[in-house]
Length: 99
Image 1: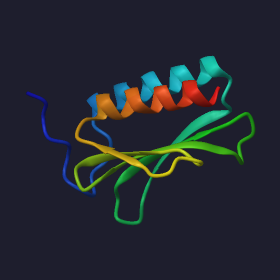
Image 2 (image 1 turned 90 degrees about the vertical axis):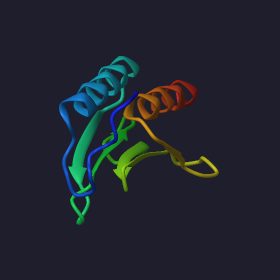
Image 3 (image 1 turned 135 degrees about the horizontal axis):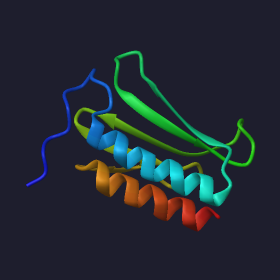
């Protein structure tokens, strides 16, 4: 059984960071300009994937209220899932479709 995500206001765990590293490596392979991780004012972590140019956001992933949200511009709505592994898989699928 998967562990619950951390409480709101806490940073990425080592397990989450390993999954984000997997996403970052995939982004590099696609030629995206980068992946930046930071925190909301409430202290919740999120990452932004940039396109070929640093001012073009192609994907956003965040942990909000112990759930993971994946959003890409142009999607009708964001996707919310219970685990970081599923969120990263969805993010990689979205990036593949956008490539």
